[in-house]
Image (cartoon, rainbow, N blue to C red; front, side, top):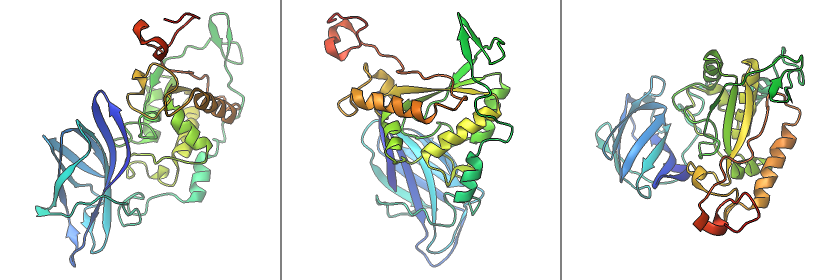
Amino acid sequence: YSVDNSWGDDGNMNYGVQFGITNNTNSGISGWELVVEIDGLKGCEGWNGTYSQNGNTVTVTNAEYNGDIQPGSTVVIGCNLNTDKELKINRAELNKTQCVVKAGNVNQNNQNNQNANGNGTSEADVDALLERSKDGEQGDDWLHTDGNKILDKDGKQVWLTGVNWFGYNTGTNTFDGLWNSELKSSVKAIADHGFNLIRVPMSAELINSWAAGEYPKANYNNAYNTELNSMNSLQIFDYFLKLAEENGIKVMPDVHSAETNASGHTVNLWYTDKVSAEDYYKALEWMADRYKDNDTIIAYDLKNEPHGKPYEADKAAIWNDSDS
């Protein structure tokens, strides 16, 4: 197994974990059930299988497409684990036979993983998926304000009704919930329910990784979202912007926290020991420059909620020139 990311959340820990189930026997496996015992387990949400939890034990049964494991082959599943302590896997059984459990790199080149039996996309497909819709015309849908009103280019008043969609701030490195849903149909469903704005919380740490040409792994259900399997986390965001435009939705990136952390909103300030104020500003500048010509992005939320209490002195956000 491999731990791709981890973050704190209200005193507990979250881990994005991939398990590689390798058949080291001489016979094929047809249908499997994996039972894993984990210290202090509080919750589990996973993909590429059906998951259930009983105390510290998670039971995973195969999905329709990955039940067969040929000799020497590996099936990869993934999950987000919530525990009250550091991750410790005590034991695992596959089809009631005890397994060898070890940490390491999970083999992605196997029969039933990222591409869900060969249904993935090629690099050429990614370029096509990211290409703007033929009906889209850059710059034809800018909004502007007049007094207390938001207007379109023709002067018609626009009402914005929005939702939040977390994940780019938590360590998922894409949208939370895609382990149980499909991105394309989810964006359409948001529009169909009458919403025309999505606020996307992000971390400055993630944005600066993108700016440096580094793309932390996006965690989602690879079988439900095969078109994403050849995309990195930034490309998935760009694809989301295209889907938003096609469904009449505007987007407001929200630099929610300095560090990638599901509890980043509890940090008072826009900088930490790990991410400086200058790093934070650079993240905002990079986003603004990259998307300056994209009329799907309507605004930026510069910082979720700077806050603090008077007794926290310079550890709290202050709205004037005082010391408290």
